[in-house]
Amino acid sequence: MNSQDLLNRIIINPAMAFGKPTIRGLRYSVEWLLETLSSGMSVEEILADYEDLEPADIQAALLYAARISQVKRVSVTLA
Image (cartoon, rainbow, N blue to C red):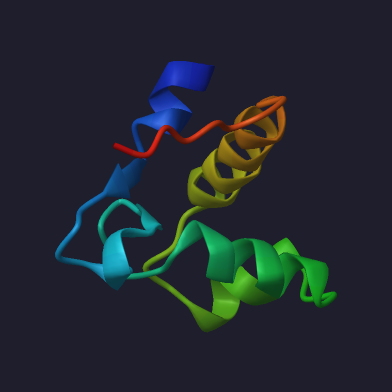
């Protein structure tokens, strides 16, 4: 699966998860998945506990986080 295919699994819907990026619109936020991984839960444990998630979903969340971390700065212009 290429990078674009993985990133296409990340959905941003303002009506779901407070507009946070989610995995395939399943209400699992990328943030939640990354926190779960960082807590020490293994990929295998996550996939066993959340059967609607797929290995590519975890890869997609990690790729999304990597892409977000490439942003050097965010500037906001107030009207």
